Image (tube, chains in turn brown, blue, purple):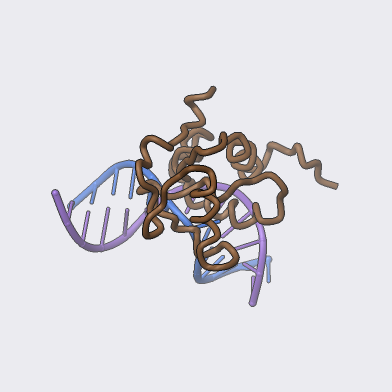
Length: 112
DNA sequence: GCCCTGACTTCAG
DNA sequence: ACTGAAGCCAGGG
């Protein structure tokens, strides 16, 4: 029986950080990965998001690539759910790209 | 039990 | 400045 507080896994580390993303803010895979001490593991962060669908409090829609592009939008149900969620939080999104991404960008290390 | 792919990022030429 | 290739962890076939 694996405890959900098992921080031994890279995935769980990602979940912890993503869950801490404040309302109306977004971050990038590399930012989380780098915060975990694995800047080259950005892919794993994205893959963790894929598994995050099974979790209750993991706002994967607030995690985008370094360009502020909704690369993972395609993995969400519907066609523009991710964009709708972001716009619902006050984040302007045009053509799957976040406007003023640097203004909405939230760095985990910034809070810690 | 082995091989491959995947929501990215960074280094090197 | 641009393009190409490598790296990372985990899950699925």
